[in-house]
Amino acid sequence: KSEKHPSTNTRPPRHHCRPLRSRPHRRHQQPRPPLRRLMAPPLRRTVLPRTAPRTAPRAAAPSMCGILAVVNSKLSPEALRLQTLTLQRLVRHRGPDGSGIHVVETPTGARCSSVAHERLAIVDPLSGNQPLFSHDRSRSLTVNGEIYNHKQLRAELKDPTAFRTESDCEVIVHGYDEFGVDIASKLDGDFAFVILDDQTGDVYAARDPVGVNSLYMGTGLDGSTWFSSEAKPLVTGGCIDVRIFPPGHYYLARGGEEEGRLVPYYAPSWHSASAATQPLNLEKLRTTFTAAVEKRLMADVPYGVLLSGGLDSSLVASVIARLKRKRFLEHG
Image 1 (cartoon, rainbow, N blue to C red):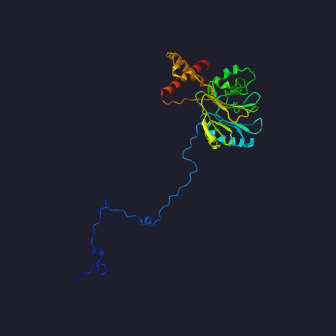
Image 2: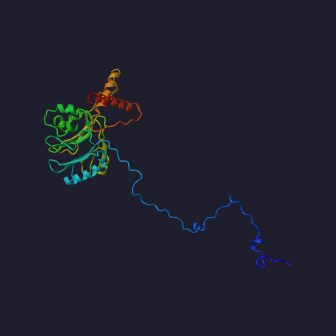
Image 3: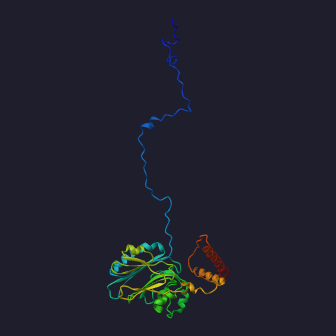
């Protein structure tokens, strides 16, 4: 006879009858994913719009002034003004300190011309806004450049009328009144400019001898002539041809002429190697280089020096440091 278990049941507990199983070691056991994760729907990635960029956009660094001129257009004065103002925005990054525009009808009244300017103020930042005008306001000037010998040219002028501004570029329009087309050859500096004559309809444009300042020209669909510091306004305005204004040339179109002519005014002898007949003069090289750096320090605003690590930029920075120290010792 079998003995009875002490409990009330006649059968023994299950654990006494269940066979033992060997469990794997916890290190080799794979964790089971929770049931909630198995039954959850796939997550959708939501991209929220950014209210502000992570970093501020880099603004275009202004380099020099920007000019735009449209000559002998068939548009009305109001339409030409609107067109010029619209295209003027394409060169606004070059001059953040001021804008100006001047629109004039030709003497016959059949066509109109305009000059516009975007200014980066360097000399006389308070009163040197453009366009600049002659004493009788019959000629208007838009220019991108620096004229290093403007004080010498002022002294050469016969007209004693006082200038309206202290800008170094105002001497161009007054010099054109006295010297005519020869004014470009008398300028020492970097420049690209256009002069309109309201009374005669003449147009005079010029670029510096080696092309430091950019200038483009083109022909509009209506036969008008365009000038700009960059090609973008010409292309956007629908010019049928866009070309580079050659350095060391001036452009002249008399009133009534639909097409002007380009005339070279700069033809130095050093273009030919046969002109190099003098022996090397290191002292003259030193003084000429120092004078070239010194005249480019003409500014009424702070300036800086970009160092590339090369020999030329290091020499320029060294000369500037010496000149500034000399000025401080002399003038404080």
